[in-house]
Image 1 (cartoon, rainbow, N blue to C red):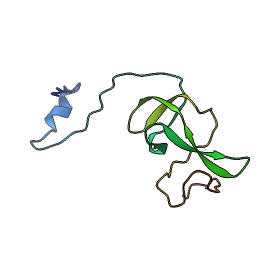
Image 2: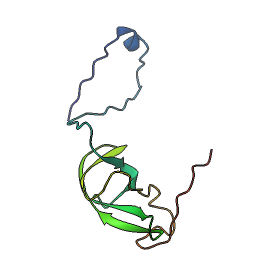
Image 3: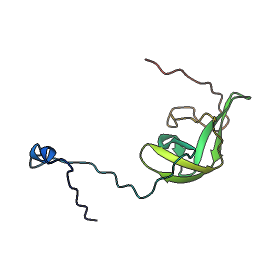
Length: 107
């Protein structure tokens, strides 16, 4: 696919040099006011680990994803607002039924 990108401000173009590279995000759709989760939490395209706070374990839950990008994935169904999803799915021990607790982010 060939993509042509124009600069809105000519002064930006003046700073470009041969050999520079760029990343571009092409937006094909957008939904406002939807439930979304971090894309890093998605497993096998339609599953996510959710903390079951009553039992203190994580559960692998299937959901229906919608639009997504590198950062966010829309949730069409299968999850509820406020549910805690695991974003470290590659961490040792993360599996369905494993005991878990919320970790505070280290600063």
